[in-house]
Length: 596
Image (cartoon, rainbow, N blue to C red; front, side):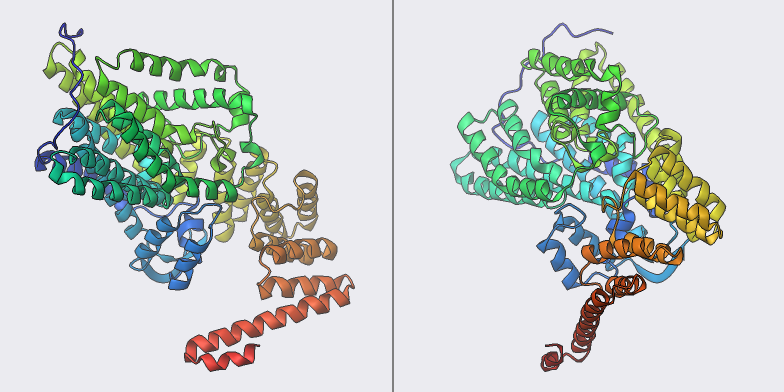
């Protein structure tokens, strides 16, 4: 097997739209994708962010116009992605079920996971079709476009994005990003003849709106202006001035959301890195994705590759050679293999926001994650499709690529079983990454909710063994000891938590502090309970429950003056809520006078 003697020529700049996309390949991509993700339709929620975003999200249970307005006014869970939550809310309108306790989650739920999975799969298949149309326009080679779309649809790295309900944010963002890129290409092709210039401008405007929509679903879409510049220059042959103008237009639609994200997203201590370490972290991350692209095994949601973990290994330092070598080779042969060069740039640019050069929130768990390669795999598909020309026999090349696609489909189908339910998901995560503290904690939480205190005890202990700073695990472990009537052990755990992490709000919600305060009151540690209830009241100052508990704790330690002030505020808040509820029930605005 060798290269063709005839050199591949660089394609001429596109001047007219290709013929309409053939229906048969598109239906084939959709059909194969449905088969691969067939059992995901019946999958459940998983105990990793699905509670925050969906089944325990107060904004969705039930969704209301008021809750929808709130996600557009302000960030939720350190991200401003209101369009993604609007999509969640729209699905939740059709996903309501009678409230019931789900033992796999250890939580009451009132939403069915099925409609969310249907939406995720629908978005993914739509993205695969958009990938086909984009590649067909850019390469004018339908075989390459088909291979690119199949790699995108079937690769095992995509399973996390498709099967994880929380990552509906990512697949919806990708949908709008691909719409923007398709509109960009069409706008360039519509610039001739002159009668089509008006349509071209409409498409440019539409592309900018799609970019904004992508950012409103997930901020990683901020890389789209650079990608547009690459497409404009490498494939479309657009003059520099015109290409820069469009990239600037797209930047005006991404920059505000980048600034918002930077202002609301906190970086955990475990996710911090020094400036000189970040190029090495980025080099390692790039090499990781290259390896997982061609060896997609042992995949999980948390690889535990925090900046500290990466920099503690010697192999992180020479890893920068991989991205440099790939980019240098692609650039050197850019004239002979422009599609391969474009594929390399697509792969690199889509990964760039999450390589670790700029710190981001999830680095507290891991710098690398399967979902970050979602759109980058379009580049891999372009490279694989273009590589067919390296074979002497085109039939042999297509046979090898077909075998790889079948392998990808089989591996993806196998990987999807780990997302069928929360226990399978958590146990698989631990099998791949035994240091995944969150998995032990969430298994323990479900066991505790189901009354299996023995299993809860061992899993909380395992969580703290792998992450001694996990304050929630200390609180919950102490609660288990109280249930087992082992009060001395509970007191020891609480004391240990204060020595290890202190009563800081990192990773703790107001409800967590409320639980801690109740536990401390039960153990007779009233002064410590005041501190916990005060933290809860500070995080949710309009909660009468936290204020009432704070007042009780203050009374228990003899601070009656402070307790009275807190109790008066509690009563005022309770009365205001009662009046507002009555107003809504009666629809009588005049009744608001009682709340003054």
